[in-house]
Image 1 (cartoon, rainbow, N blue to C red):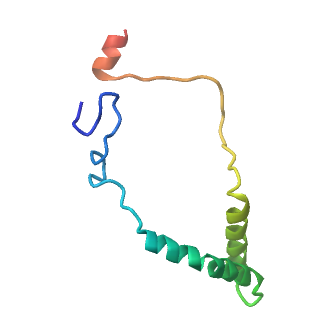
Image 2: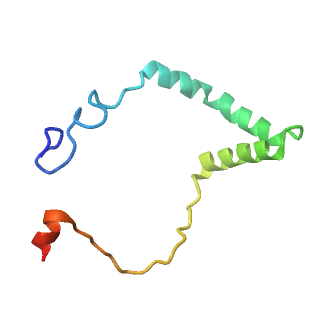
Image 3: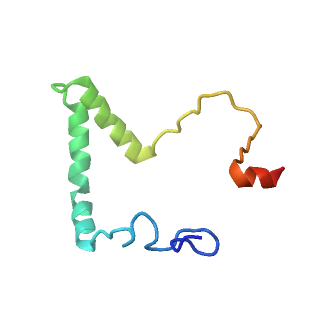
Length: 98
C-alpha cells in the first residue's frame, strides 16, 4: 500500500494530489466577500431586470438568483436503467475470482 494511504486504504492528509493539504482562505478574505454579497445580489437583480441587455444574459442572472435561493434543480438521469450490476475483474484478481 502506498505511503499516501492509511491502513483502510484512505488517503492521508498531505498524501494525495495536494501534499500541503487544501489551501485555507484567510478569515479576512471571507469577511470581505461576505460584505460584498448584498452588492452582488443587487447586481444580479439589476442585470435580470435590464431590458437593454441580451436575453441570454438576463436569463443567466435569473438562473443564478434561483439557484442561490432554492438550490440547483435536480438533473434527470437519461438512460436505460435496470438492477443489473456487472463487475469486471482483470489480471490476477480475475484469476483468483474463478
